[in-house]
Image 1 (spheres, helix red, strand yellow):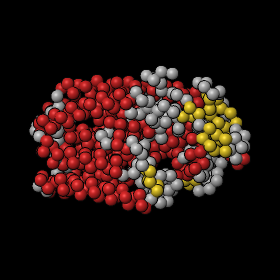
Image 2 (cartoon, rainbow, N blue to C red; image 1 turned 45 degrees about the horizontal axis):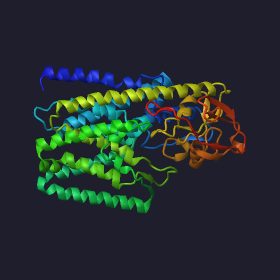
Image 3 (cartoon, rainbow, N blue to C red; image 1 turned 60 degrees about the horizontal axis):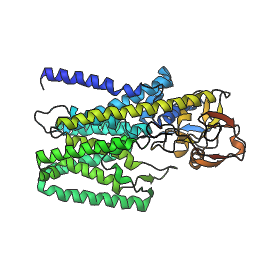
Amino acid sequence: MSSRNTARTVACGALVSLLLLIPCFWQPRIQAGDLSSHVYNAWLAQLIERGQAPGLTLAKQSNNVLFDLILSGLMGPFGAAAAQRIAVSGAVLVFFWSAFAYVWSSSRRQPRRAPWQVAPCLAMLAYGWVFHMGLFNFYISLGLCFAALALAQSGKRWALAAALPLALAYVAHPLPVAWAVGMLVYGRIAQSLAPRHRPRLLIGALAALAAVAALLGALFETRREADQFMAMTGVDQVWIYERYYIAISVAILAVWVLCFQRVLETRGVARTMLDVRFQLLALSAASVVLLPTGVLLPGYHSGLDFVSERMSLAGGVLVCALLASVRLPRPLVGATVVIAPTFFGLSYTDERALNAVESQMELVVAQLPPGQRVVSALADPQSRVNPLAHLLDRICVGRCYSYANYEPSTAQFRVRADRENPIVVSKFDESLGIQTGGYVVKARDLPLYDVDLCQPGSPRICVAPLPAGATLHNTGLRVTPTLGGG
């Protein structure tokens, strides 16, 4: 690459990075599901370290902690609000540019150009379902795994360097690391074989996936969903809130199908099917259908859930890598340039509505004396992502205790509840019952305050004390009706 082209690529990269970070700053608060819980538990970790959280401990664990450690490190000097902006912005840049590097390293087009033609799709994937669920340890881990795969494909000099992002990815979350190692092993074996022998390898790998699925079902409690097939291509990532996002998913899928047709016309059907990139995509798509989407692993009180939905994000990037192997027609690239602002426009409007709800909840919680236990079972029944599930966690930072906070009772995170305490319920089924309804308030829970609608059907939110014996109910509040009416 000439120095002029290098300078142009760097300039484009800087501009894209600035544009990419706009959704991290366009609202008073980032709306991303579990992010609120991560922020709240980072604050609890500070209380534990100061001896101000009786009954809670910090566990020493080697994974599922990287994002939390980053938040904790940033909260000290910058405060909770700035810490989450910085941490999430860094996570987005890591994911997007790692995925971009992987797509670029997978390209065999000559001259090898930066894959800007798929950048709009990668941007939507970066702000898709996984992001809005707030699964940031998984999100960062997957990004780092794509960085490792990109390094592994860049020649022998860089192959050993791939171990570093893989090790760091494991500290974030082990699932993408297992996936990436499988991709690396399959890719190496497939490249060592003559193309005509690769179909046998693919069949063997599919059989191995089926065997792993059967083994998991025999050894552990697992969960499957009938709609796992929706995660095969990754387009489900842009369905984040209400059903009108499905139109965006269908539009992207249509563009991808037409782009794939261009790949077949350019490279031929046989050559495409024998291509390692296509076979990796086929394996990834098969894995989200064959493997269970939920697994309860030993030692945990809550299962590893949403496996299919999580891994569809990887599948979406693999689709981009395959499509970027040819020069795509300008009308199709232009279509993604139109679809992306539509997606982000819908997201902006819905996140603004969510911020309004969080502001209202913040005002009513501020009426309470400091240090009170607070719960809420508000939920948006129309949304694929329940955006209200953890809002109370972030609101409580520095002012109250989110009594249903799920992390300490799962044994999956570093903040643990090792006994009954005045800060959080110690059993996961109790936390789930408070969040989804059915929990009966006990005398030991008091005083306990409930953030709920002032009256059924009212848009106003109030806070009120709960008596012992009261049964908590899930309350529907439709927050994101951008196109749905009502």
